[in-house]
Length: 220
Image (cartoon, rainbow, N blue to C red; front, side):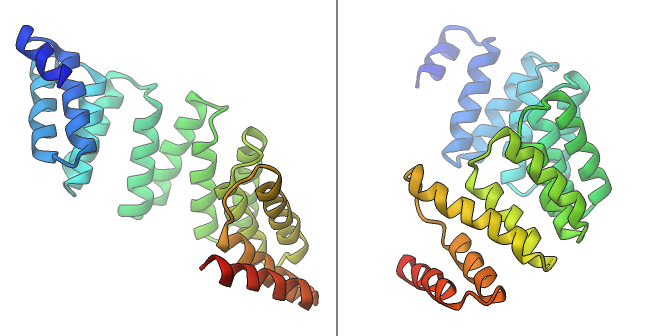
């Protein structure tokens, strides 16, 4: 590859080792990725991207403790590394079930990039899991202000309303999502159509519910 050629010309070319490691990681050649990224760190121990990408590789290898340590090293070098905060929050939320630490890292990410929807969506998922529905709704509302047509956010947002028994709120979200599919030529979302069918059924709008369930069956 071009990165291997660069390394052949200059054995101390840190960025080439990092990019080589990233390429290996994307191809799931994880041991090779780890070797390249460790070489980058050996050459420059305070390069945040080397530690960050090593953390990604170690996470893929299911070496959770070492992955966490590398993300933390990334943040010690660069406290404003947005994606390291997101990834740490995700590990604490999904893998370690430590919601308090997850909330901390997602909030840090929000402070770094307040106009990026990612952290708001993650917090919405977390609060929904904890059944803190009002908090979940507030996070999804901000995310949708930043990106009004995100189908994943709209699907999750509607699910909050549906779970808390707010059929009217769920209908408003899912009808918007289905309308977006048509106007933006988006692929149909079977979960959204199913949830819309449930909302119609709960509202006594049985013919419309049947149409939505029919759509789900045609998609599957």
